[in-house]
Every structure is written in structure tokens, then in C-alpha cells.
Length: 457
Image (cartoon, rainbow, N blue to C red; front, side, top):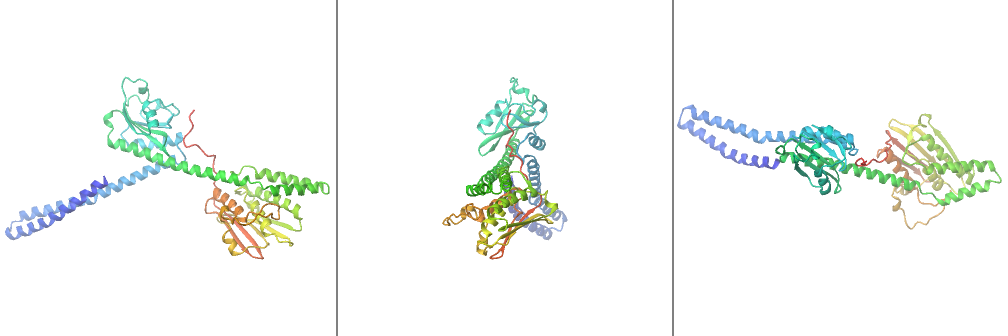
């Protein structure tokens, strides 16, 4: 349509370029040869008509195109509001109510290829949600993934049970990754009601919904991948830390049985929470409790004089929702990478509210790190130096580099709070390190991953 209008504009430009000079020459010639005003009036009228024609050809089509474009975008936006979370029965009904008035059809329905998700229009009560798909045309389109225009035989009583007064229709496939996941169907009183515009509308709306379903599936798969990666990171139990902690508890059983009992409870609760659900938000209070359990186990190994922890948790923040397993890895980094050979290590944990959300700070007075090391803190784990030998750290676990723990924490923060939230690291060699976790705005706790389309009964 746009190409045709552009060609018409070019032709009109050429004609206008030829006609206007000719009429001006004719006007001058008439005024010089014949003083009568009639020819001049006729010529001027011709010029005026050309001006109107020029305005119509060059201005009106652009206005019409702009109006049609705005309407198309508006319809697409309205449909997206309903289908952005997958094609549920409610979403399908919303889409039907938007699409049907834009066509000449008297009724329409959307299916998942096996059953009706929603129907709207004349006779829709005979094709309710959950009704199994029995129309041969629909089944053929699901199988072939090709749009079909059909006219129903008046003698076919089975098909005439659905939309009985509507004898023709269009069935367009909804496809995602070359897989038919449903159909969009328009029904008309007569076959003559179906023209190229109606088939184009059916195809266009089906493609629009298919694109939105494909986008939803990609978003869902991305979220599932993030969940799987979080579970994988969570399930990494360090055997060195496990065995050394058990050894520490065993060594205290005879000499300090009450302390051994307390540590055993901390150890049990520590791993119970470590292996619990990592996909749900927790409270800051629970995160601090988990961090303290880890510190208790480390103090049993090194002695309370070698490792000290001070907490300053704002009472207004204890019930704040935070991602799980973000505090303990930061405390673990302090023990692994900040502790000196002989001198004690002090760790400070504090929380505070800000204008934008919540901040959690973990600081130590340990050995600190150079600017060069800080530049690579958030490098992906696979980017760590492969030639660096594995060594057992102070807490008895394998030294893997603080970047892995920070990347893990950052991933959890982004998963629940988005890209605006993050981690800030400040460190000076010989003085210590401060890590600030900034949680901005309200958290997003993902619901269980839904299906692209509802499962059939």
C-alpha cells in the first residue's frame, strides 16, 4: 500500500511539473491576446484544482498511513498486555475481545491445538473454554502449520454444532520455534465475507501473538536457566570445610561437650539452610543468623581471640526481604582472603536503610587488596588463572578466588532485584576491605515457571 502511494506521488509530481507551467503560459497568452476575463478565470480555476489535487496526493495519504500505523501499534500494545505472561484462558479471552471488532467476523476463538482457550462473539456459548477441538480444519492446521480458509457443508451436523449460523472461517496457526502451539480462528456468516483483507488480518494477528508467545518462552527459559545456575552454585558443598569442621567438633566432644553440642547444632542448621530453597526471598534477620553460624564454626577452629565479629543491624531492616545466601559468602571471603598469619581479624556487619532501599556492609581490617586485584573481582569464574595452584585456606576449604563468591552473590542480587542493584568494593592493602551490597527498590520474587499454554486435560 505504501509503495503504491509513493508511486502515485511521483507520477503526480511529474504531471504537476508539466501542467503548472503550461497553464501559466496559457494564462499570460489569454490576457495579452484577449482582454475577456473568462479564459483567465478558467485557467486560475485549473490552477486551484491542481493545488487541491497536490494537497490530496501528498498530504492525505501520509495522514492516513500515520493513523493506520498508530491504530496498529495501539492494538498490538493492548494484546501484549494480555499475552505477555503466556496464553492462559483469561489472556486468550482478552485477545479475542480486542481482535474481533477489527474484523468482519461474527465470532472467533483461540485454541491450544487440543482444546478451546476462549471464544467470543455470536454463538460462543456453544464453544466454551475447555471444549476439545474436533473441527477437522483446526486439526489439519495444527498438523500442517499452514493457514486455512474453509466453507462448511450444511450437511455436516458435527461441525455445525459450533457457531451454527456461521458457515465459513479462517484458521491461522500460532507457532513458536516452528512448533504449532495453537490456532486463531475467525468465523463468518458467508464465504463471500472473506477477502484478502480478512486473511491478512488473521495472519497478522496470529503472527503477532506467536511473536509474543515466543518472547515469553525465551524469558521463561532465561529465568529457568538462572534458577538452575543458582541451584548449582548453592549445591557446591566444599568437602574440606565439611571434614575440618566435623574434626573440630569431634575434638571438643570430650573436653568441652556443651560447646561441641552447640557447634553441632550450628553446623546442622547451617547446612540445612544452605541446602534449602534458593528461589525464595528470605529476611535479613535469617541471613545474619546464617552468617553468625558460619562465624561460630570458624571461631571454634581458630579461637575467639583470632576471629572477632561485630554486628550493627538496624532494627528497621531485620524484616526486609533479601536474596538468600548473600551474607555468608561475604563473611567466608573475609576469613579466606583477609586473615593475616598471626594477628586477629575483626569483621563488621551493618545494615541501614537508604532513600532507594537497603544497604548491607561487610567490612574487615585484614590484609586488603591491590587495585589490580580489584579490577578482576567480578570476572567470570572460568576467567580465573588456570595456572594458579589450589591451596587450602584458613577455614579448611579450597581457595578458589573471591571472584566466584562475589559473582554468585551478584547473580542472586540481579535475579531478585534487577540490574540497578549491585555490589561495591572498597579496599586498601594493609588496611582492610569494605563490601557494600545495595538493594534498590522492591524485590521481584519469581513465581513458579508457568507453561506457555495450559496443559490439556
